[in-house]
Amino acid sequence: MLKVLHGTTDAHNELLFLRLRKTVTPDRLTFIPKWNWLAVFTMGNSSGHNNTLSIPPGKGPHRVGCTDLMVGHTVHGTFLRLYYPCQASENPQLPDWVPCREYFNGLADFMKMNRALSERIFNYLFGSCKIPAAWNASFKPDGKYPVIIFSHGLGAFRTLYSAICVELASQGFIVAAVEHRDESASATFYFRENEVWMYYRPLKPGENEFPLRNKQVKQRADECIRALDILFDINSGKSVENVLQCDFDLSTMENSMDLCRIAIMGHSFGGATVIECLCKDVKFKCGVALDTWMFPLDEEIFPGVKQPIFFINSEKFQWIGNIIRMKKLDSAIFPRKMITIKGTVHQSFPDFTFLTGNWIGRLMKLKGEIDPHIALDLFNKATLAFFQCHLNMDRDFNQWDALIDGKDDNLIPGTNITIPQSSI
Image (cartoon, rainbow, N blue to C red; front, top):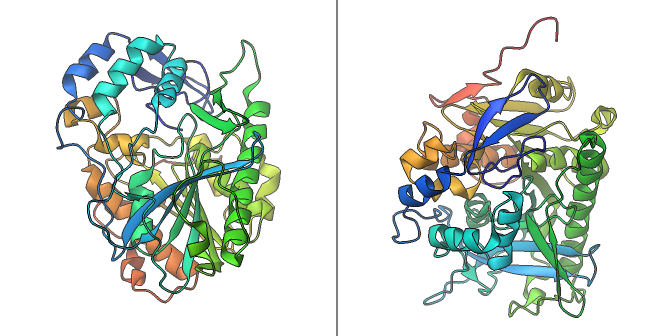
């Protein structure tokens, strides 16, 4: 889930301009709209007019390229943003963070706003934001790269976690950020003769939420698995048609992926997708679940999850019922780790935290008390150390092993939530 990208009535609806208040039901959050905040936000944020607010580049040894890949002409096809180590080039083209106006329209529909007005506002705020990766840059062959599939949160889409994906690619991973077509993205599309756009599906009045979210998390897992299958085809040299007809040559990635070292990663609803994927496909050797929303999952699948899981939580988002469900995945046999990053909020993981000024970011709960760059550095390093351990990689990421156990001034081992003994 992504706080800036949600409707006003669904569980964990997380809109940029809504004030949060928890109800008595731990699986639901209710938000009260404050539309006059729109003007406040516009005046309090200047990313559209200067370069002081930007998505941080990767810190690893590799330059990063990216491209879009769409396979199939129906809603049952696959759509993803691919991040990869690339060759150096002069004056690389950097892609827009929000790819086109339809995504602004999707956010507007989400927020029950006028499309024309919101498009102008979003374009002012974020229209000039770029992703720090070279668009369609030439792939850099360098042995075999491990693979990560990334699942976005409710109301997000494939580009909104680019800071995480770029960093992982800079460290020598191929990262496929799936754009889900289960009607949980604010907007997405597929091709018939022309583009067919799909937008977020809100709950109907009186609708029971669990059946919808459970159905969606199962579809999301299937979409992640299909994305992985396509990477297998590319790696084996099979011809894969990209409906988008991008300039990137997929054949240059033949025999470049270490398909014995595959991880699944996601945020919020994407964290639930991580767990569903681990249950469905053993090709995923481990999973990293960022501030996971456990509500969509059927607990009957938990005994089937036999791969290592790393829960990385924010300090301000989690609650007792959600943590208890995470704890139900504990095992004496299979590794389970959990840390909490002090001073973080649920939106410390998506890119919005880097693209809003301090005072408005904190007002809208897009920033926590911790510097977002420090938070990003912490969970990236902890993630890399976890991957080295459980993907059996010969790298130097083990220098950050202590972070997996929460050993840092900005980390809490386990959770900051007190679990009643009766619940345990």
